[in-house]
Amino acid sequence: MDDRDDKIKSSVYSGRVKLHIFEPSKRKIWTIVGKEKEHWLDPDIGFCSCSGYYFSKMSDNKKECYHLESIRLAEKEKKTELIKFSDDEFGDFLKGLISDL
Image 1 (cartoon, rainbow, N blue to C red):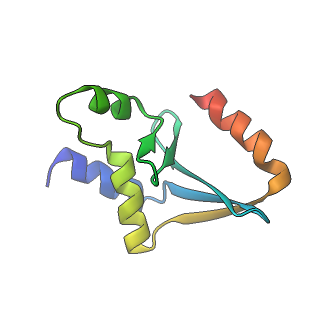
Image 2: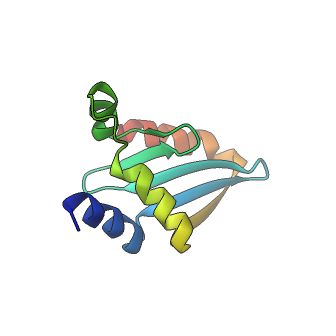
């Protein structure tokens, strides 16, 4: 097993993969809590806010960041932490998330 696999499993099995659902709209925001900050992800379009995402997209490697793979494993293993919010909290949640970027 390599360092990348260790990071993926650590993210999943330590409960750092989170799905935030806003109700009643059912809007979803995925996050993964990192060592220094929280990363926002959209697995449907293959996006992550981490620097590894940008560097991998600009390189010849084109390998996605381990955060996106962590979401897939968390869903498969049913290890996603589900957090529900009211739609009224959506704006403040986004402001907080963007300020961490």
